[in-house]
Length: 403
Image (cartoon, rainbow, N blue to C red; front, side, top):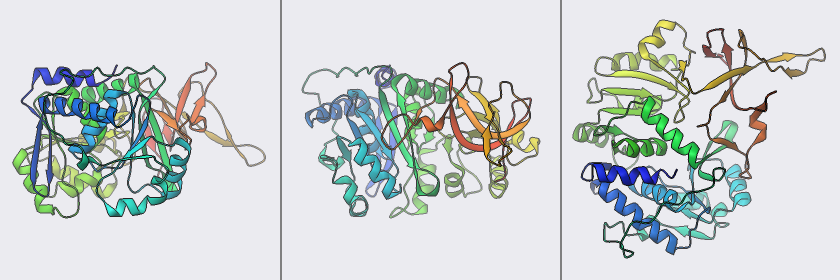
């Protein structure tokens, strides 16, 4: 199912509720659900006029902002494949991705630094789209009605994410429309989102979940011209009740002794020891929960549970819809590593493998499914290799190794 249908429904239920709030150098911008719906539909029409069609991959190099989310939603509506890329991705693997996948277009900000950094790579992309060239007005559409969200085949990718991997590499993963819908619904359910709440939102998938649940997304101020004082002013002005973000982001944002935030969810459990004390202090004004798996959560626990276990490497209790196992490595007589596929959970150490119908596919630099990051067992079931080493006990509690 195209998740834009959910946005349409949400705009009918609460048209005047703010959907996205962000801050620019000239002040705050507020977009209601009705205005978001209208703007996305208008932009989808404009993208179609620009020649962006169903199945086209569109590289997005924008910071979190209204423009990023409008382009993301509009591309999802017309069945194009938005590719979210980290601007600090290594040049060599990023260039290989662009050369092999040849995106039909890219969305760029007015940034000389970004254009200079990716100059050679972006030359291979035939069409450049700049948000300032599109007028995001909530005008009456010239077609007189909303466009129909495009349904893709069950196996076709609907969204791709590129992010930095280890040693300057690149990790890619892709969602089909059903996987994306299930991922978004899981976020709504596991994060206990409620319509009318205000969330400090810095992740595209969380924005999709917020839009699904009717939550207002306040886009955090980016580092640069807007100072730390603007961060505090933004929180005090809009009074977000919750935030879901990595520990480093929260350490930067939550420096005050008190805050309007009542629900703090740390996305990158387990916590490093130097961060634990800070979040323990945060419990004076908020409930703190830890997620393992970042924006596709696999496990969770409260901060009190985390402290009671007594180990800094515990990742929390895995959700019921997540299958886990560990693939251990043993040395054979020649000293080479040999992987043994265990059939039942035991107490052993190795690489964590996960499976679930909501999990995105791992992709290689050619845009194809990366079979090297999949493990296939006797029944033909495929498991995703996480690359994380740790130990799994008989109670299915997983602890990361200290390496």
